[in-house]
Amino acid sequence: MASGKSELKSRVLTGLGVALILTWCLLPVVWIISLSFKSQSAVTNGSPGFFPSDGGGAGFQNYVDVIQNDQFGKAIINSIGISLIATILSVALATLAAYAIARLEFRGKKFVLTTALVIAMFPVVSLVGPLFDMWRTIGLYDTWPGLIIPYMSFTLPLAIWTLSAFFREIPWEMEQAAQVDGATSWQAFRKVIVPLAAPGVFTAAILTFFFAWNDFVFGISLTSTERARPIPAALSFFVGDDPFNRPASLLAAGAVVATVPIVILVLFFQRKIVAGLTAGAVKG
Amino acid sequence: MSTVQNAAATTKKDKAKDPKPPDSDRSRSENRLAYKLVAPALILMLFVTAFPMLRALYLSLFSYSLTAPDDREFVGFSNYVTALTDSLFWLTTLNTVLIMVVTVAIELVIGFAFAMVMHKLIFARGVIRTSILIPYGVITVVSGFAWQFAFSNTNGFVNGWLPFIGDDFNWFASYEPSMIAIMASEIWKTTPFMSLLLLAGLAQVSNDMLEAAKVDGATWWQRLWKVILPNMKAAIMVAVLFRALDAYRIFDNIFVMTAGANGTESISFLTYRQVIEQFQLGIGSALSVLLFLSVLVVAFLIVKLFKVDLASARQEN
Image (cartoon, rainbow over all chains, first blue to last red; front, side, top):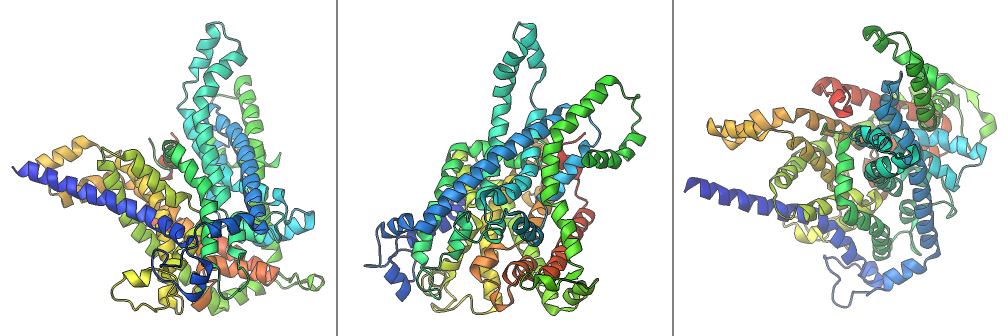
């Protein structure tokens, strides 16, 4: 039967496609994990190949070294602290703005949305020079707020777009309905609107956190010491004892540690992230 | 507040073509509330972008080096002349455009294929979507390192796996292979994002139309080009615009993988080097302004050439 044959063909093709996607997404991740288990002496002498060679494995030694490394530990704390604070503040401000955009009619709505769009596409490096100069003058250079402020303004566009797309879908009449049924306005807000808005706010928070965690340009330009240097910058400065021979396996272990929080977020909130990423871009 | 005045000024046009009844008390108070809610976000966004950009515009007119801050001297447009007559500026711009065009083209093809597979999937959807988000979540610096070490001839596996390449081939010794390595990392990390945007677009293509085309005897290839692609044009164009402008800013991968060796600098990298490594704020600011302008030009060209419909992206109206 012709249709049965084409059915089979399409299944085989889809199966092949799935295998291809999985390889694409996971191969480099598996590779960096595998590299992190090569011993440092093997790497210095050269140990090509995907897996650690016989006798070239290091067990968990690289991870122990990374965690005991003072520079790296501070960078982890900086990254977590800066990203979390930036995320909370950015989402709070974006929630206010997105509520106004989704719910209120006001002049200049278009201006706000266009500004957000332009900023989302801004070439960040072009701001590094003037910000470097300004931050040094007002004492924000190499401090947490010095990174939190730029992270906030660059995540606000994404957060505002995602949230206003979510807020538009909320049936706001339910708030009045609850009040008619005898709820106070605070109860109506807390029991009806907050649960409906929470998933959107949460999605915006995850995407904001991703941005802040991933940033490299501000991280290397606006910091100079481990006081505020985040992980990506710390990784790129991490040269070990011999600057001409990067400690590849140690770096790989650091990279794995830096990636773990993100992978955990992805595993738990996959559905929300997908919804958030596509909410602003395609009419749904 | 000046931001509010600005906002009002830009929408004068809308008001003219959309005659509203004179402001009632209600709409006036709604306006006031909206401005209060929007102002903090708007001010913060402009404080970190518009204000520094204006400052860069001002500084770019000076000969100004942080190593000798007292020798600041007004030089007019000579920083721009210096930048625009230097072959390095054009070389880095060319590199950036090359990376943008090649990566976006490849990502579009692979991303579309991935989106088609995900669209057809009935089982294991969650697993696939979770794994496709992993490259998106991995820090660009980590991706850069992973691929740099993968291509390395002392510790990598790429040479061993590629049949027509010698085991000790050094990818980072000359221009072309270095660019290939940089693009590999860029493409790996951002294709998933592209495929998710395209998947959302694919979901909008109506199944009835596809069935009708099938009944009329259209081949798979015809259905793809005559039904699927035209119906998801808006999604494709938005994905291309977002990714192209993002690719134009390429910096992290180059910094980590080659540090600009063998002529692999991008325009972002050149600007960074002038400002942060050499403390040349004058010429660095001129480069910042040029970088900003070139992004505007790229955005304008893409919107005009491909007729991107931003209204549908904005979900307005």
